[in-house]
Image 1 (cartoon, rainbow, N blue to C red):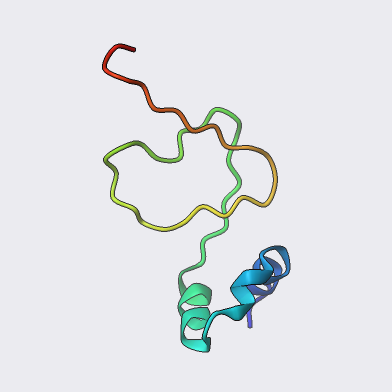
Image 2 (tube, one colour):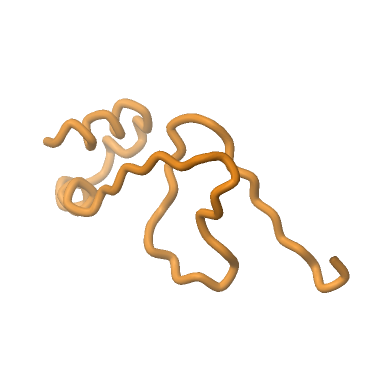
Length: 68
């Protein structure tokens, strides 16, 4: 098991309950990123390419109505 996956399982214990096949996919496709404050991570209408699992910091989620 990679160090990245081990670290992720330590932070998100529920993921340890995944079947081994799912853990294998997670290990294969896991991307760790460090983002700066103010960066846009995704927008409404984007195709979901994965899940964001936040290790530290905060994420602001906003939806602007037609009226603003």
